[in-house]
Each structure stands twice: as structure tokens, then as C-alpha cells.
Length: 253
Image (tube, rainbow, N blue to C red; front, top):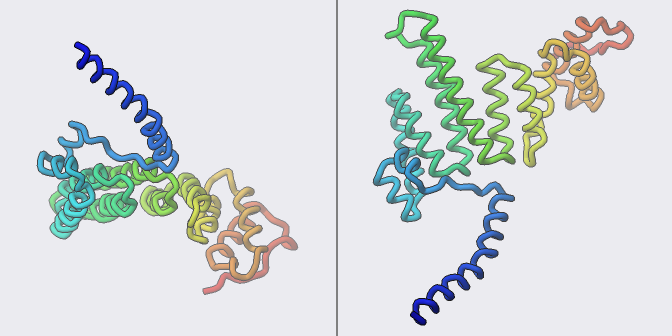
């Protein structure tokens, strides 16, 4: 009885010692957004028994790299359902791998969507457009979840901005995500300019866009690129800017 009591006390003491240390590690990881996918039954269902055992053994990155290669092979064979499945597995195993989220979105929103729209086996245009749109949505889902796991990555924000701009033709959301891109550490210098370009296409926000384009224009010669000049001239006409306040520079070809 005494021995059993000693064991219980020892366990409680060890737990009391470990608790603040584990709590500190948890807080530190959360502060750096170092979350990882839990090794639970949901993950096992997603990656299969062998993959789950390998992940459980500490070989997540190796399994993820192997599945990534398999996804590339599936892409070459245009097996889009398999590409989707494999990238879901890869991103679950390595949620901090920015390239995995980016590539998954690219394959869905660009490659698979084009294949769906040009599918010779589907004669109905409406159904081809529907399938194309579904692949856009899959690409967006990958990027949104990638941002949740990597909130400080400018690359994923930019990829989402381009998706809204090039595929959805949604200038308001494209502006929002280019703007967010520009606010992230290490963001490309053009992100701020691209955000304002997208703003200039948004109905009801012409004056705001004009003011911001004008600020870029007055910042110096390096900012006076053809698109900026073109959008400024368009807004000058739309806002009826007095002639004496308009820029005189021609659009460069």
C-alpha cells in the first residue's frame, strides 16, 4: 500500500514539474504559429495506415515528400481527383510547407480548371463552366487553409489575390489580398501597386483609387509604369478631373 502511494505521489510530482514547461512550449509554438496536424483517426483516414504509421514514427516530412512526388506524377497523367487527394494528404502532414499549399492551389485553380473547361467528354458548356468553377473553389480553399497555418506568409496572400483577379475577376477581393500581401514581412515591392490597380476597378471606390494612384505617380519616375498611367487617365475621365490637374504623360508602349 505504501509502495503504491509512493508511485502516485511520484507521478503527481513529475506532472507538476512538467506542466509549466509544456505550457511554455505550447505558448511559444502558438506565438510562432507552429501548429501541426494532430496524429488522430482523421489523419489516419486521410493518409492511410502505412502513411499514418510512418508519420507516427516521426517521418512526416519524408512521407509528405513522397506523396508530393506522387501528386506530380498524377498531374502528368491528368488524374485530377488523385492530385487533389494527394495534396490534401501532403498539406495535412506538412501544414507549414508553403510550397505545398501554393502548388495544390495552382494545380486545382489553373491546371485542373482549364482541363475541366476543355473536357471533350462533356458537350454541355454550362456543366464545363460549373466544373471549372468548382476547381477554382478548391484552389481557394487550399490557399485559405494555407494562410490559416502560415498567417505571415506573403506568398500565399499574393497567390490568393491573383486567384481572385485572374480566375474570379473579383477586383474587390483581389485588392484586399494584395493589400494584405503588402503588409507582410518580406512582401514583394509590387504588391502595394497591384493592390491599387485592383482598387481602381472597384465600382464606388474611384476617388480613393485615384488619390492613391496619384500618390504613387508623384513618388517618382520609377512608379510611373504603363499600367499606372493608364489607370490614372481612365479615372481622370471618370471623375471629371479638371484639365489643369491631369497628368500629361503618355502611356509608354
